[in-house]
Length: 214
Image (cartoon, rainbow, N blue to C red; front, side, top):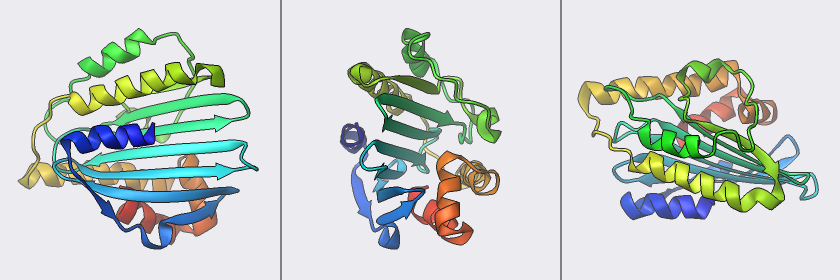
């Protein structure tokens, strides 16, 4: 799905690879991570993490879109394959600076899959800025094709939602809202954030987050 997402982005926003430097490959919590990042012209930063661990029994895939040029919210896609299960988590965070983001297209997708493969995402500090059209699903691997379809439809709906260009004070406000989320991960934690801080330390994790991922 990661390559599919990159293709969808690249069709509209040309991608230029960003050198991840020392963070191209790293280990954290028993997992080996391969990290890459791109600048998407007209959109913002796109980053990818692919990880394997526990003798190949667990695989994780992450794609993060951090818009800086247009007023789309931040989008985080996580996919975890472990012990016969397939977990899909696609979360949309309010980093919009001007007006409200229309969730109509995303809602049509989430409504179509309501009640299927539901997974309790738990409670987190960032729930107040997470849109209700985020998704959290868990199923056996035999349902991977269906979860792939959901993931693609959800991401397409996100990318195709109209959004205005940001500049001047609006760009500054958007940067502040993005920083609130990223700093919150570093200060208050998150599933992958905690693993990175434990393995890399706070300073290196902050560099990874602020220079590469977001």
